[in-house]
Image (cartoon, rainbow, N blue to C red; front, side, top):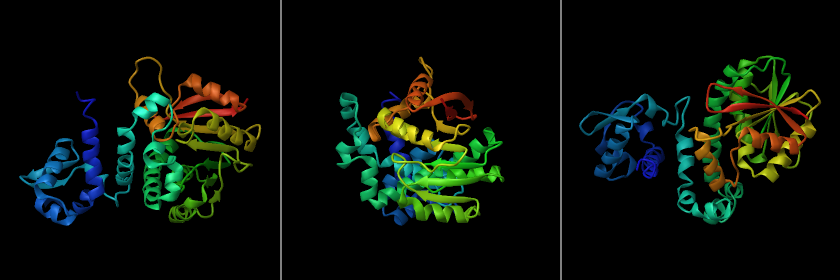
Amino acid sequence: MQLSEGLGPARTVQLAAELGVADLLGDGPRTAEDLAAATSTHPGALYRLLRALAGAGVFTEVEPGRFGLTPVGEHLRADHPQSLRAWVQFQGLFNGVYAGAMHSVRTGTATTPQVFGEPLFDHLDHHPEHAAVFQDAMAQHSRLMGAKLAAAYGFQGARQIVDVGGGDGSFLTGILRANPDVTGVVFDQPYVADAAHKQLAAAGFGDRCSFVSGDFLDEVPPGADVYMLKGVVHNWADDDAVVLLSNCRRAMGRDGRLLLIEWVVPTGDTPHPSKFLDLAMLFVYGGRERTEEEYVGLLGAAGLRLDRIADTKSTLNVIEVVPA
């Protein structure tokens, strides 16, 4: 029953993020009536929403009808240093995709084109408001994971890191901060250039990290000794993933290494978030999560070899890859 009702809690926290409730509570608790006036919502309905999320630990009902933030709820504030508000809003974009996901189950292809009329990345090109949410969501996730990866994985001996599909550079800056002798390149589509330049300048890495625009399905900047792909390969079906990996292989020297920061699906009945994320990749992108064996086959087709899988003390892994 809990599995079948999971969309309810998800949609509830999405609504709170869309309304900006946590931002309104930033200065302290407020009544449901006050919050309803500020968000143009029905007071009784908003109270019920807040009560449900208080029961889930997002808000707290400090006294009848008056709500404040919990440490979890603080992450829904747009100004929180580890904000996840855009990430939660981004998930809400795909409610219609999940509703129509039987298409993916029957065909093995993405549902997004059926709902949006075009593949996701084309849709983002044509809808700047959704692209902005996407960029902010990816940056929020990357800020969290960049610091974790830098603490868990050693970049000793690295000279220059190219973050392929690196967005606004939030992920790479976390790694550069922990490795002061390393320089970096963020490589992504031209539409994220402005955001990347601002992020790199704000982080104080304008002299150590540059942004290069391009399409990684065409080519990847050569000359670095470390290449990274964080949460990129899983967006793509095998054929496109091999093209991407082959382009990385051509850019790498014989002593270069490629780091895939991805979820590795465990075999058997072991519970793991990658198994539900795998379905999300199918429904939204037409991509997939992969087992270690599947990565070995994918990499081999691109002239690469899996060297080891490093534990990051999280559900993500670093898959170290070298030329075959």
